[in-house]
Image 1 (cartoon, rainbow, N blue to C red):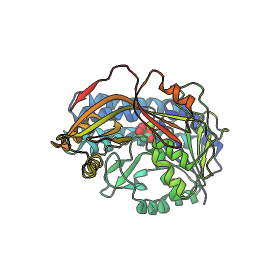
Image 2 (image 1 turned 90 degrees about the horizontal axis):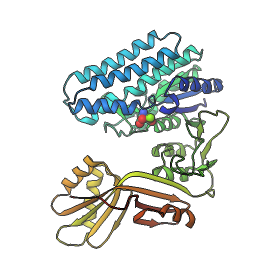
Image 3 (image 1 turned 120 degrees about the vertical axis):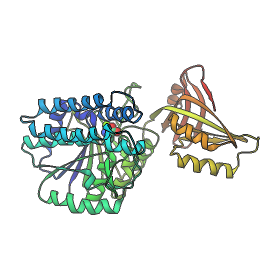
Image 4 (image 1 turned 180 degrees about the vertical axis):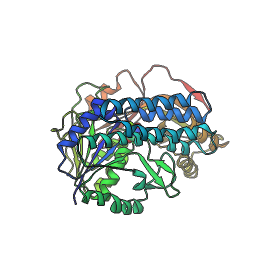
Length: 430
Ligand code: ASP
Ligand code: MG
């Protein structure tokens, strides 16, 4: 049975109007078999991250932060629903579970607690939506994504166990769809084989929708967003941004790999593997098809600019002036992998090796410590990584204005530059 998988992000359900709008879109597609994947409301995930950090590092105020999350959900539920008593109980139960955790002092690793706590954002949002759709007379059924999405136990970056996820999707979701139910479930979260909650990485709801699309052989997947589709650059940073009506899977993978935030980078592969078209469409205009991403022969594209902020350069040199040779590189790479430091760009010279990566101080510090005595590492931070796909000289020269280019690499379709916006550079000696 062919279904459509919809995904709504936090921005589309940040307030009562958002829920009402989502309801309208769903009614519009009421005749279809729908699986609806939802993120947490608005900035809830950030708020819950603060709860975990505050409690884990034993600072005061975690409980108050949690109560803010509870109150904001109750307010929306009260304003949205005719009868909010049942959902109030459910909200309460979810919050109480977290209260129990944060009443004790932490015994396990941070990432484990992160997933147990932050995941309730999606639990709360889907509960509210499921009640609302039911009040609208739709055959909504709330499904716990942790009963479907099986993962390993890499907290905060869990990998999908495809075999078991497929079995569960067949067993649970297909049954609901055959009964003409409309499935409402959480993005971003999964379950390990030990039955603990895991998460798939920030903004991972798109990926959940793609995993489910794959397992259900969906006819299409639709990401509803607060933009017109996939654009040639971030409209908050650039003028004259245009929407790309069509993209190939390959182009979409490249763009997201370089940091385009419009879809989660892992989303495309499962869809491409089964040739499932993906629509990125505006939630304020359900008639517009937005951008269609599918299996097309390479199209020609205008220049597309992707900016990855918060970058740094790590200059790694051997201490004794020996060449940074292959065996050094292999050691450096195995440590990068171990510390899950993603290399966005790299360059080697006689006695040093430079990489561009996101500036995440605790990860980089742990990496530096492990590099040990053989190497010396210098960090340049407060940088940006600019990628221009399908560049032309004009776009390139415009991007270079008032910026210092520290590293540049040109390939056939792509140019990448690590840039500094300010005149003076801050160096942290390490
Ligand atoms: N709520 C999660 C986040 O904000 C997942 C998502 O939005 O896709 O990262
Ligand atoms: Mg979100």
